[in-house]
Length: 116
Image (cartoon, rainbow, N blue to C red; front, side, top):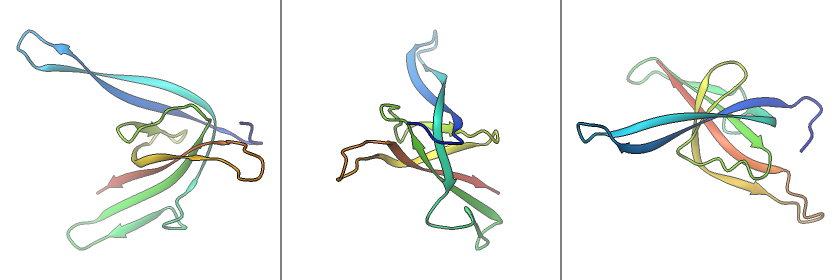
């Protein structure tokens, strides 16, 4: 997919490896650079963030990400945007397909960052 001003993202994946000498699972994290993405504030909040002050000062920032087809993002992944912040993937990615042209521009996922 080609956008006039694409944004690269880093896809962060964790995998469970063989147990260590104490019998504990080992965890590794891999990074995959994904070029050609589009990122925008989430639809649920036009500003891209909201504040919850009931229990503590907490800010939830949300974005939508459209990644190239076949990227294979899962709900267990995390995404680092170009601004350096790392977001959780919320839910299962949706695959876009045009009913008029059958064009598939990519996989859309929701991203969330909770601070505070």
